[in-house]
Length: 174
Figure 1 (cartoon, one colour):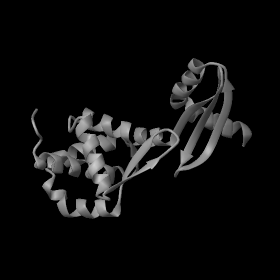
Figure 2 (cartoon, one colour; figure 1 turned 90 degrees about the vertical axis):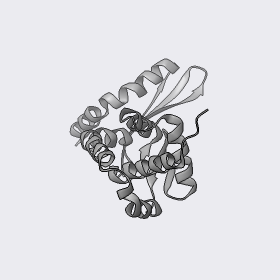
Figure 3 (tube, helix red, strand yellow; figure 1 turned 120 degrees about the vertical axis):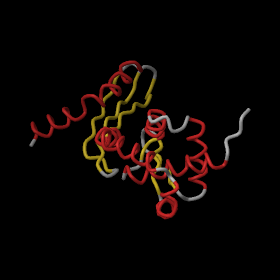
Figure 4 (cartoon, one colour; figure 1 turned 180 degrees about the horizontal axis):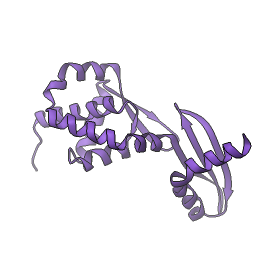
């Protein structure tokens, strides 16, 4: 088994701090995994190790939301990044900046749309769909459905249709 050098782990931590700081928002683990793998920066286990070490060191924080855990950069993380940012090659910084420029609205939308379901009884599920703004619920739909498959399908379709549903309801009621 090959052991990663400390320099690589330090580089990965800087990359993660840079991404979190430049995104300007807390990102879910799934978003972080997707970004880091799409950019070929690091794999899942390296990312998990970075998250763990940075959180233990107080450089990032985690917050549990109804759907998942999100991570953001702390003041200590920003201070560390300010001191060490030039140790991160310009090409890596430019790649992150370009990715965020292209995908920012998609990342923001993902963090604002929540869909989940809770089993209430045998073949009975409560589906909860929300639109969040600054971690506050601004729109919510609750419904009871009678199969897990139906509940999952509604949650899956929420992300695709939430914006138009929200807009339509507000226009019809306003």
